[in-house]
Length: 220
Image 1: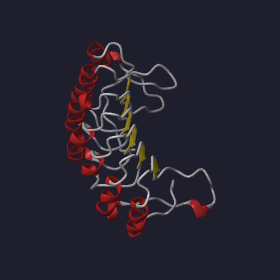
Image 2 (image 1 turned 180 degrees about the vertical axis):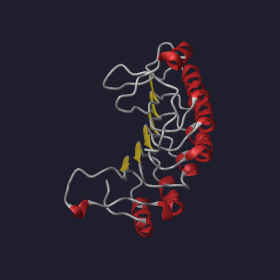
Image 3 (image 1 turned 60 degrees about the horizontal axis):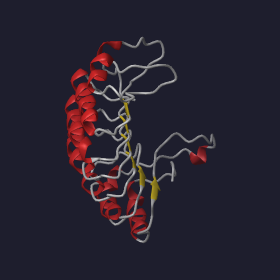
Image 4 (image 1 turned 90 degrees about the vertical axis):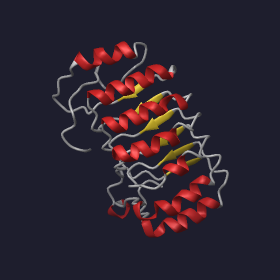
């Protein structure tokens, strides 16, 4: 259901439909740019007015394996997410989570032992939120990849995440870049974090990229 014009007023209908799909394994409500230029498809999924209604419906999806809610502006789903213990992929990118939201989300994420791919790009998460997420990493015992690109991470947050990934033991990728054209990567912080997490791939990009200590100039 990539952007199909769902708004807060339609969430109750969506929630009712989900309650009749207890065996659902994949739910995609991402508000991603639509590749079709036809304006009839130029809609967004803004669920901000109905996230509290959607939460109980999500709790009923005990067999859900993949949940993608990027850009839906959700703010009341943290407690429901911790009950989706079969999730292997969770995308909450571009939901303006912030530090307080990350702190609320972290203990619920720690319950997701089957999660392998966590996507939290573009959420205004700073060092405090990163520290909370880092503390939750050991609970996600099968986690392989974490995406935290385009947030507001400083050195303390990056080091906390790298240390958490090192304690985790099986994480393979930690994506934390806010990469801009013409930017020169700095190996200073990368060297520090690689000492904590020597066998991990900290990030991937079209060229050999490093974690860096430059704070984002704008939220993306």
